[in-house]
Length: 178
Image (cartoon, rainbow, N blue to C red; front, top):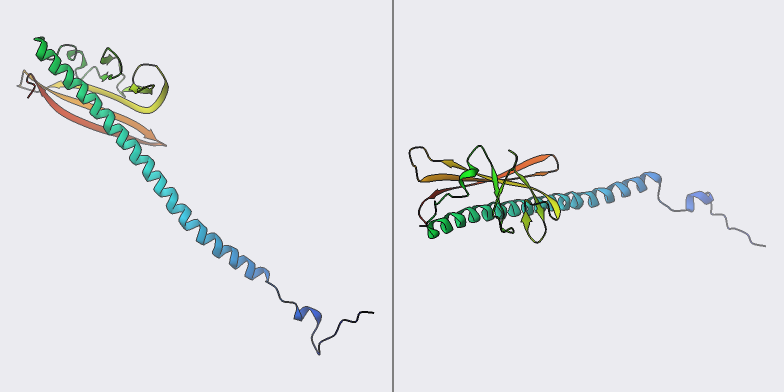
């Protein structure tokens, strides 16, 4: 026969040790706070990295468009053509896009918000490949009082969540390749 010893003046429950519900809740709260802080920091860091990536892509897309326009101007001057030939359709009231992938470098018919860009072996306004979140356009503005000078404005826009973003690149073109 087993006899459970009885301690003097103490009940069996008083000798059992364990965590109370309050201690457990405090431990869980401390654990959650210690985990939540680094997760918030990591989330903000990831969001900043994604924004930086999109801003870099937009910058490169704007630079590409500007380089195509300058290349067309240089080729026109070298061949003895009118230096703004094929660019004069892209005056302020008619935004265009410059397409580095196609044999036709100027894409006419962009809306006032720009041409949507698709990705298939490069970014292009032609409806080939997967649509990206970027829109791009450029337009020419004659410089007042300067018959041989134009301002080229390239605008690349994208929306990240509900926040619209735009990147503007501006350069002046003359009928000289210098």
